[in-house]
Amino acid sequence: KGKRATAIAGRSFLIINLKIANSEDDSRFLNTRNYIRIQPKGSQDNLAPDIHNDTVEIQPLSTKLTRVGVPINESDTEFTLFVGEVDGKKEEITISL
Image 1 (cartoon, rainbow, N blue to C red):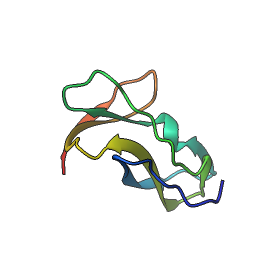
Image 2: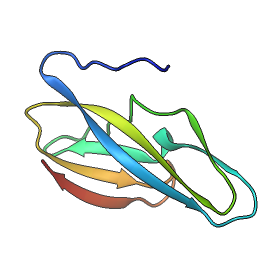
Image 3: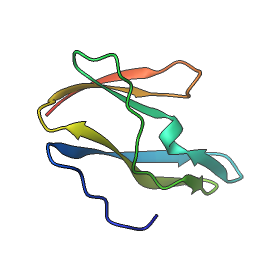
């Protein structure tokens, strides 16, 4: 909404920078928040981004830089990042802070 986000006490935002390439001849529109989930180690919760740029346009034959943010507990230091379509196959990436 164009406002600065502030985490509540004991929480922080994990910001994930995204680089999205479009090799097609027409624009693509993505809701980036639908392609990222974070799971803290030891939890079964898949956290969705609370900070995002709504629908992102990736213009033809270009690369778009954007980001998403997920509120996390400051005590959590290990996560699994799931990247992929909501109902499709996902790539798993381990993150340690």
